Amino acid sequence: MERRNYSQVTEFILLGFSTIPSVQVFLFQIFLILYIGTVAGNLLLIVAVRSNHLLHNPMYIFLANLSFLDICFISFTIPKMLSNFFREKKTISYGGCLIQVYGFLVLGETECVLLAFMAYDRYVAISNPLRYNVIMKTTACVRMIGASWLTGGLVSSVDIYFLYQLRYCGDIVIDHFFCEAPSLMKLSCNDLSAFNVVKLVGSAILLLVPLLCILYSYSHIILAILKIRTRRYKAFSTCISHLIIVILFYGSAIIMYMKPEQMGHLSDKLIAVFYTTVTPMLNPIIYSLRNKDVHETIVSLWRSVVTSKPHFSFSI
Image (cartoon, rainbow, N blue to C red; front, side, top):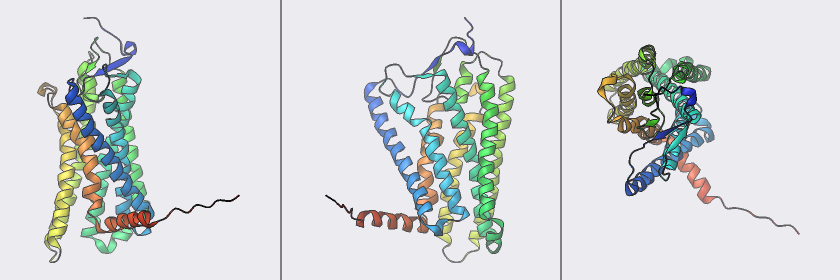
């Protein structure tokens, strides 16, 4: 087989989900609705937090940043997939593929760390409410957000450096709906033993460690909730819904990035849908739109838009 250096590869072919026209039209409609709904829901949350000074506290600052991450996260994958539904040749340039991988890794890894800090914020609020304002100052919140972005950027830079060194043995067909690191590795004819070690260590740091921190925080939160005599059911249901979303996000990502190579990839695309599309869509609903303060702010914003009347003035 002819060996081809990575610099000679100019584009990749993305197979997507299906080549049947009727199925592609159906999937286009589904993913378009999911994309618009996700962007609208997360954007609405950001506007709500910025417009109400009562929401300018660490919890809502974290939520607004999570929404911003989710908008960018889903925008790195879904628009390209939507445009490819109507193309006979579903291609992406080599540079565009690496940019998509890098952006996806930065945003995904940043979100992993941010979710752990959000769990710690809730842990402090419930377990030590009297000292919450002292521990979780705005400056501390900003530092945690900055640390999330810095960690995601540094770890993903190491990943993209290794991916840039890959050579391809003539096969440029990616059996996925977007460029993702595991999919590129499957096409490579390099010795991937060193990169697999880096990937395993990076995944453990960015996936397992934050997940364990989240589970530890929520275990203490649940114990604290069980001691509450009033509104226990509402607090418990909110906590469980948060955990379900967290497990869905981390679980699907762990399966994708930490599974042994010999397990195959028949379900890779389905698994990827969960952390690329489903969780960004559910995050604003689970974390925010069920929140009374956020809900009241959104209702107030809607009423102000509906009741406002445009004024026109003409001068001659």
